[in-house]
Length: 465
Ligand code: PMP
Image 1 (cartoon, helix red, strand yellow):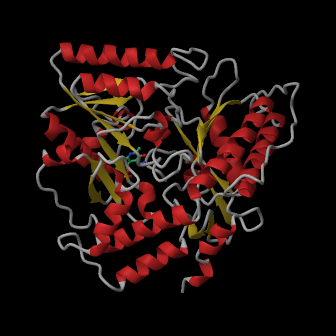
Image 2 (cartoon, rainbow, N blue to C red):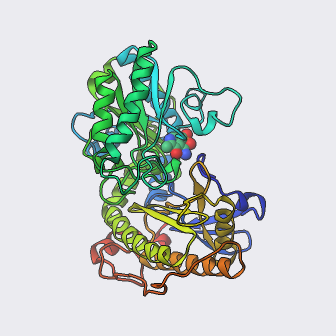
Image 3 (tube, rainbow, N blue to C red):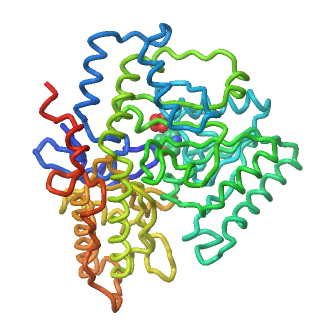
């Protein structure tokens, strides 16, 4: 299970024993195939043949660690950094998202010679001691509580937060609140080393901040003398459809970018990318396994597949269809409070009713459970109340998969309402035809429209011996 996610019913009521996985499907010990809407680490698809072949070949050739320079390290770093603004030119390769964020904090602290960190309420940035300290999601539920050097600002939730979608000044108001918290900290003698946030906040329930928000927030932090760290562990490599990194949606350039999950398609690898000036403040850095040739070869294969199979474009098109159809379901089912997201990074906010927007945690778990048991579709919940169903599947998720998902969800919600699990008021607009634009680019399914280029360049699963 994802460190930030929750799929209690899967784990407790009927634990899944997965033995194999391919593309966006997982197969359990009984041979049942599940549609995987959860595994964002299997970015280009489970066991992608090109990735498996790259790993096998490299393991059979050279597997030494970073102490020795290797050609694949240079090549991979160049390829990854090419996807970032020029100023972010120094890349450290590490082994997990936690390790990446730990290094990012060290970089920010050594550059600024300060300690304090600004984070979102309910943020999660990793499982090392250093990161638990700056992850309210974790430390709030532990005895240790908040440390003095941590300053918690509200995440800009325009569905349920203090300032909402109907307020054109919501972004400014959230930033003013951050400003109040930071100036209070400064008056009490604190000096801000950095802000660390997910730009699209998956761990708080796929929160999509207003477009002008980060420009304002980054200005505020920089005026306070701090650096801005974008945690792209969940959102990197085109997941959000429109851009390779989530921060790009907001037209800002962070001082430090961290990423992990998707880089190795399941193989443990992560990265920190920053400016030369910031990197120089740290001095030497060494990791035994970070950037080893096997990881780098896998990493290159992942980047190649994203490009060859046009997975970012596909995520954009499939995500759009999914969101449009989920929006139709929202009109039909009273407990679907809000659907949001971009690309294949979506959140379905389950509520007691639309008027109150009160999170319906238990209902969310029942829905996830029914989706798994009845429809063999795997989902999980996020957010402080575990009531936001997240959809972050492998990027090869197709239009047909999208259709299976919203059709099954419709049927589960309809059954819920018939069994009285919650009250469902049918609106007047109820049943509408699903919006499915097969002409859209990038639904990489054999049965659907597919660019000949993508098909030609894809290595077959049968090609891997
Ligand atoms: N940052 C974010 C935003 C995450 O979601 C996670 C993991 N869920 C991490 C960091 C930590 O990554 P890892 O589990 O690879 O250490």
